[in-house]
Image (cartoon, rainbow, N blue to C red; front, side, top):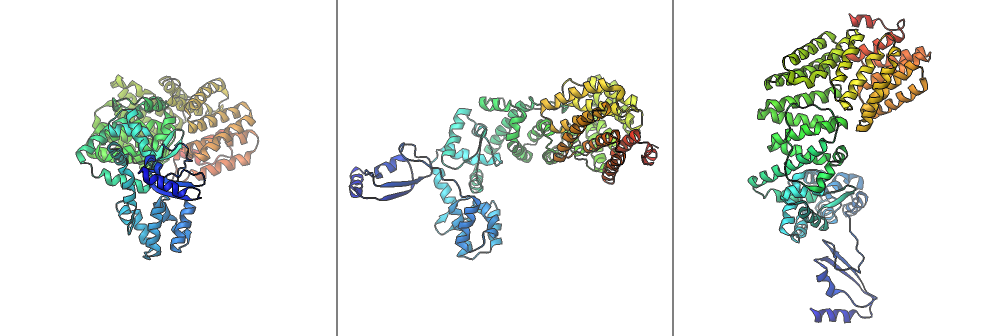
Length: 612
């Protein structure tokens, strides 16, 4: 080798030559081929960093972007780039994949639609990406072959993560190794280009679609028995980290059954990160969602535990669509497994999400009855009390004060029978207060809401919600809040401090609306307008029909007080129209009640008919 190296260098001496070495294994393989003269230059490509070449300029070659991918494929096929957009997504910016597809389209004249169907099928994709001696699978196999057996195993197991982005902590539970050891293996896959860094702070990684397909093929070679143990270890670790995060979030979600805490194995760095609570979950949510989907297939109890642990975060961040999709999937899986306690918890959670979506009354009534039926099967009074609360909620949405009061009375009766369920007493007062509001017994409603606040942990999200409910009741009296200014100021100041501390943006909109209505009562109309607009901006971004109605009522109150009678009437007419068919009668009742307080002469006769 030394003789050949010397011959190469003597031959190149005094010449200006560019040497290109493709697919270099390591620095040791390249070093004997480096010219000695200063007029020569070398370009070398490798599947991993050539760390031994300190004097070289190192560049990481990224996949092609969409535009250059389209240009390359268009030049190979003669097809307009705009007609290749979907195909390009499956090629992941890899020139090899683009050239193979280009050969199939340009030389074999395959139909674009058929090529797209083949690439979209994850089980066929790598089989399809072959053209003569060119094959994406063979290229990936060659890259992976340079990794050690532990890294090869991790590469296959990463398919289980299922998320487009993930952090390096996933390696430890997948491999059953300590955090430092597993991180070193993970970094090896990054160095080989099999994982790409997606974000830097916090660092996240991912696989492009073709690499992920190959990972899935290798995962299928692991025996089901071995894989089941790995899945349980991984999912238990996800549950552990989710538990750490959940315990930092003040969400007020009430669960009646003990929730597993997950694996006892610690991951020091990941544990610290998870202790950031909702901020950590903002980045890890796709990983948690994918873990729940994986567990729902074969580890149903773990799926339920993960789902219930996640509800508080999803509620605070108002991720309603995500919450509903997860709950429906896991609830159906649990129903088959025959666990009434888990089924009851999931039924209640699903009702809560659909209620926030302002689902049709018929659907909510059906969900409430299903929740009550599963609660009865648990045999516990507390489960029945909480389910009756949902029956009461559906009654309130229908503006049926009598039925809501009946549900509240049944809840209180059960509480008297079973003092251990005292934590649910505040919910009974919620419904008692709501029923009294519908029945026009405002002073009794105010007192019920006060009782509910007293039975709620101070500074909690749930207390903030109850403080807004009390504020609504205090503003609904004949004095329109003027007799309760000190109480209103105190409860709304506390509620605002709570929602701002918790980062509850939607909760802030409700508080701003109530504060705006208080400013109207105080005659501070400029401040009222600013608060109501702040709330309206949030509701435009995060729709919540009940909040939008309350905000419109505040705007109408401001207009009435400013002497803008006809604009105020138009505001309320618009809300009545919006709250027509398909919306809750409760909203119409609230609008008409507000109208009668400020403008009894102009209020539609529908109010008297509705109250009857």
